[in-house]
Length: 493
Ligand code: MN
Image 1 (cartoon, rainbow, N blue to C red):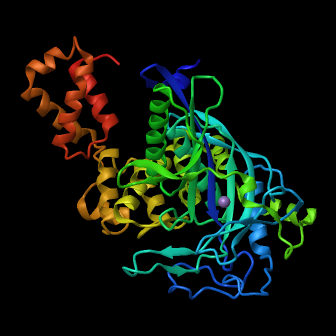
Image 2: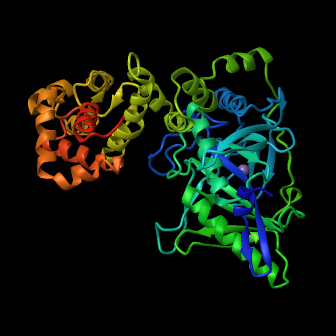
């Protein structure tokens, strides 16, 4: 067993255990209308304002498939390097719930629109692993029961009823809560690149059912429990950690795990039983007689394939080879397509590493602090032209890296263009060796003991560099300071 595998194990009283995780992610399709009706899908409408007769399941109403939603599912399948099934079918999944007026959900059971695919996922330490996708199918969302509107009644809001969801089912290929969170992050990034889901987890537009089981390392798969509808990375991790511990305790006490569906309570940080796990046959799936099998034209699928954008993995590899960036820098840039776009707009004519640092550190810090949106044109009031001018000042040696920090902060604070800031505050780097020599002489004269000691301990020169930089208000050219100090202190190159 490798180190990274053993570090993921959980130590129980009776020895180590391994967590086995598979996820079913429900992603709301980015679309103006619902899967089988023309009702709108926007967020924030008043209760039951976006409900057609089809969504309300009035007698005799017939569902009509939304071509755009099908296209989005195919697009997503292609983005997951998955097999597109040219023939698929919609089934009725029967169950009763007050917010499900049809008495069944239209879903895809035996013949989903998308088959097997895979996602490459990065761990925090930069290593990667592959999660196999079992399938992606289209289905309707249910409405909402509102229990907090009245002390005596539950209200039903059907705005969400009939909204298109993609259920993306993974194989049980994850072995820790970190890996599960990293998988959802990567999946979300891909969906955002594709434009097939807006990925807003707070609004519930991307939520995960997490299947958790434990086993002895490398042993037989254990019985799993499914935790429903977890909608943040942190909750996914907390739910998994709690649930794995719970199962281990039961097994170590000689008990057995009941296959069941559980809920995560974020307030208490624990999972609790919701219902015993239903089997597929409990739902009495059967083909929906109102809908014909879905047949896709191979030419149409091919056209969608050609229209796909450059996806995160490909973009990362290209940034590394085209600009010589590290895997880390390229990874940070491709987390959002707009970041990479901004980088590529600003880097033209500049040192790629310098611009990568500027975007991944300075610009992102600014964006996080102010909530400014990062786009291909800039972030907030910081434009591509300003970033370009800023890099040029550093590259030309006009400002030192230390002064550059101040210039960026003033630029972020809205003081204008970098050149104007440098002029206004007199921040031009001192490359005049006479001025630097004077500062060096002054520091050496004031510290004769240290100057004598540095001959035996050359690395102590760093202290002098710091003093000279302070003396010059951070404006001295660091390379010139180093050269002059070495010469005057008699330190060899
Ligand atoms: Mn589902």
